[in-house]
Every structure is written in structure tokens, then in C-alpha cells.
Image (cartoon, rainbow, N blue to C red; front, side, top):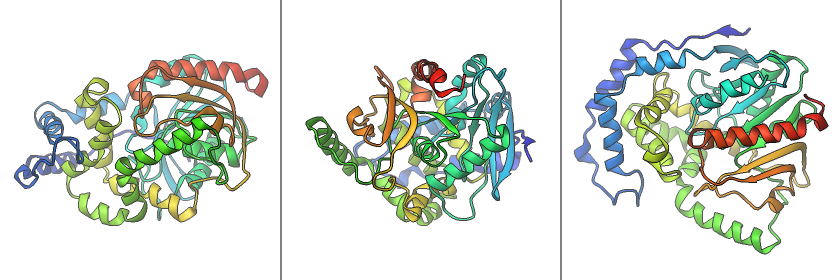
Length: 371
């Protein structure tokens, strides 16, 4: 049953988080060279100082509660989601975040899409924010089943649109693969999942694959840890808000240009969504779930027939593949080389992402029979 939801974190929880932040022993952490070996301590200290002296969770909580929040249970999993209702003239849109993001990534996109006529649904993934933990680690394929069930609960047999980056791109891809009659169009700002027999065979594709392999050497340590030993990591960080902030800030600092792309309040609110209900530990389970369910690629020969659009942002870590490689798996009908932005496209360049989504959805609407 769908139930309205209001964010209301107990004062005792907020006080506990603040006390641990204030008590953090900085003398135990020598500087290994700014951002060369992990999170930059100067930037982390800047964020923590803002946390202690200027950040106000209650202000952010009131702002978040202006959005229409709901919860429901799908196949035994509690799901939190935003559902902003349009006038029904356009199909529903499901917006899917990743790690270490949250539902707030899409805040700037909701009202414009509603004005276009779409119902907009923005879930918190299982294990994140207010969705509650899954019984055990699940990956993007199982999560895709849950997200489809959520859309069926809300809209019955109506077809819907999906947009995603990071885990949202993987989950959206599995939704399009598993439910092609339901997913009318798929818009991605990352291409994460390919058929397992897809291989580069052109100079551009080989160059991208080689560059991606080099990127992984420096940037994929967190994913390896979360995909193999998330419980150990959870024990290490569960009782350290500053530790969680460092682990998350590293990704925001390494991927885009940190302080030009984000302000302290936004970064801290995103971090707090991992802390207020102790969801950081279970948020990392998606990586382990991918390993356990073998959902890092589609079966050999698989093809996603759903019309797919890609906004290829210049992500410095997860660089987009050539279109020629992506279309070996996907039915690519729209591809845009984006002029700016990075991994957190909806936060960094919401206007560019929104404009690309609008163009894509308009282009495929009549052909797909969903206008």
C-alpha cells in the first residue's frame, strides 16, 4: 500500500551524528598528498567545518519535505520514492540514481518534467536513505524487478520511460532488457551494461577500452572493496560520520570539479541521507549483489530492443564508450556528446540533461506510441 511519508529525523540521532563529527581525531590522519592517494584532507576539513558551524539539517529537511514523498512495500522490500504528478498527457518517467548519490540528484528535473505532462517517480534504491535494507545484498537485475513492480503498482499496465546514470543506468538497462513491453524508452547518461560477448574491434573502440582499463587501475578500488568485502567496510565506517563523509567525498572530488560543481550544503545533505537512518552500509551492498547475481553483463547475444538515448557526458572516470560499441547491445536512436558535466550529470548540468531528455522523449514518442 502506498503511504505518504514525511522526513522527520529524531533530534537524538542528529545530536549523536554531530557529537561524533566534533570528536573526530584529526591528529590520527597524516596527509598522504592532497588528492593523490585518496580524499583531500583540506577539502574534507573544509566540509566538516561547514558541517559544525553553518550546516542546518532541519532547513534541508524542510526543503526536502516540499517534495511529495511516499513509501510502499514491493516483494517484501520497503521502498521510498517521490511521486510528482503531471497531467497525464505524457508517459510516466522513472529517474534512477546511483552510488554515492541519492534521490536529491533529480530535484531540479522534477518540476520541469511535471510541467511537460509526465508523472515523475524518483525512488531511493533498496538499502539507501528511507527505503530500508534488503534482506541480503541484491544487484541491479533484482533491483530492476523491484523498480518495475513499483511502476506497475503506481501505473498498472501503462508504459513508462526510464532515465539513469551510475547504478541507475545498470538498473534501467536491466529493466529494458527484462520488460521491453513496459519500458517505452531508455535514456542513459552512462553505459554500464553490455552483452558479455561484445568486444572492441575498431581503433576508436580499442582506444577507449585501453583508456578505461587504465582508469580502473586508479579509480576502481572502492568498487572492488564494496563488491567483495562490504561487511568489513561497513564495520569500519558504520560508527564514523567523518569516515563516511570522506568515503563519499572522494567520489565527488575525483569525478567532477568539486567546489565549482557543488556547494557544501548539497554535499552534506547527500551525506546525511546515508547517515540519518544508518544506510551507508547497505548502500554498498549493490556492488556485492552484482557479483552474487552475475549481473555485470547481459548474456551473450543479448540485445536491448527498447529505443535508447545516450547523453555522453565527459566523465573523467567512467568515460563514455564510442557509440559504435554501445549500439552492439542497445537500440541507440539518439546520442549526444555533451559539452560539459561529468559523473553526477543531474546535479552538475541539470539544464543540459533535461534538454537532452526532452529532445529524446519527443523524438521517440510518436514512433513508440506513448504520447
